[in-house]
Amino acid sequence: MALQETIEQTVTGLGYELVEIERTGGGLLRVTIDMPYLSNAQRFINAEDCEKVTRQLQFVLEVEGAEYSRLEVSSPGIDRPLRNEKDFERFAGELIDITLKAAIGGAATAGSSVSASRKKFRGTLERTCGASGKPAWQIVWSDEPSAKPGQKVSKKRIPAPLQALGFTLDEILQARLAPVVDFKGRRSRPVADQSIEK
Image 1: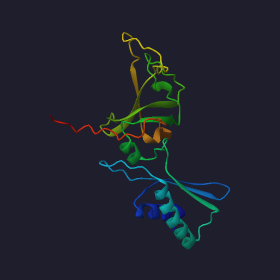
Image 2 (image 1 turned 45 degrees about the vertical axis):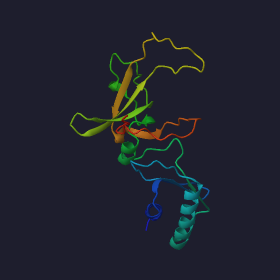
Image 3 (image 1 turned 45 degrees about the horizontal axis):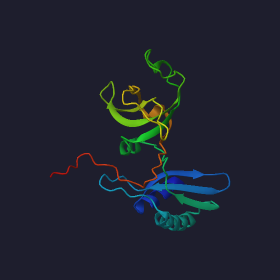
Image 4 (image 1 turned 120 degrees about the horizontal axis):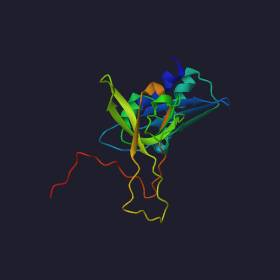
């Protein structure tokens, strides 16, 4: 059995999702895990989860005779990579960073302020309907600079227009959640369909 398949079966068998496997020249085997996508619960990977997966993987890899000098199991962190359609569906509505394989070139319209040589974008991930009616993706952003701490922003100021770029997963070199740090603590994502009646 292939190493990736062995690791994936072990991780999913313990109730986690395999995000990525990385091998380095020094014999390090790095396994990144996450909680499976659940629409009604938001829990994060902690040290106990990593320890549980590490113990099971050490046993399984020894039985399989896999060669490595050190095993490292970790959470994906705040800049979690987005690798497949399932990841994009899970994080729709979130702020992400994408890098395209090729610059947008002719895709920039005449009235757009987007450079034709631009490859990197940060914005909100949205699902759209493509030209052929198939589901597609877009990233929406504004090039308005963020206000500095203590800076007063005029209420009369006209905000910069929103811009959007449609893409397919084949056009993406790299996609990650944007590392946004909230020093007030983790908050659960608001659920749109919940309402309070008084």
